[in-house]
Every structure is written in structure tokens, then in C-alpha cells.
Amino acid sequence: MYWHLGRDYVLNTRDIIGIFNLETTTVSPRGRSFLEYAQKNGAVVSLSDELPQSYVLADSPVDTVYLSELSSSALRRRAEQPLPGPEVRKG
Image 1 (cartoon, helix red, strand yellow):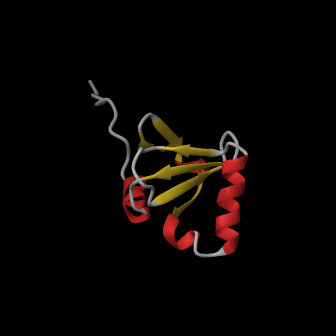
Image 2 (image 1 turned 60 degrees about the vertical axis):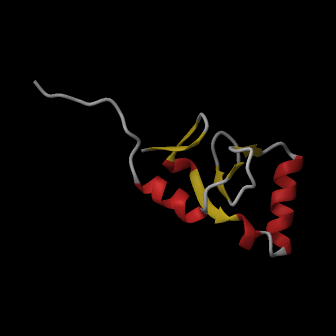
Image 3 (image 1 turned 90 degrees about the horizontal axis):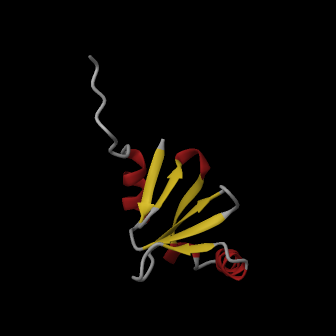
């Protein structure tokens, strides 16, 4: 199944490692250092011009962090809904 993250980004749900709340993740030194490392290595993709609330960690094609203005719970709900596709009619 595919999941629309925002803008023009669509991921296969198999590639998603996790959905994280940005505020609670950055409280710990380990969480901050992970995000700093990803930023330094060009592995961060911002999906909005707004202040991010969450991020999605995906492992395809390489480990990538997608920053989102949506909350982690909103992203989780979006992941549970299939993408709308073309209607299939049986003849």
C-alpha cells in the first residue's frame, strides 16, 4: 500500500520505519543527535514551510527523515487510509 505524506511525496508503507512526534523526540539527547546527523548528511526532507510537528523515518531508498506539519497521530490516521485510486469496474 502507498501513503501520501504531503506535497508530491508518496511512500510504500513497507518502507516506513516509524512516525515520531518531533517535540517529544527532541527532548532526549539521543533524539536530537539523530536528527542533527540526518540533517548534516542531507537525509532530511521538509514537506512544509510551516513549523514541523512530526517526522516519518523511512528506509527507502536510503534512511530519510520526512518533516511534516501534521501531528504524528494525524499521520498515523492517514497511513491507515488507502490512497484514492482509479475506480475499477468489472464488466
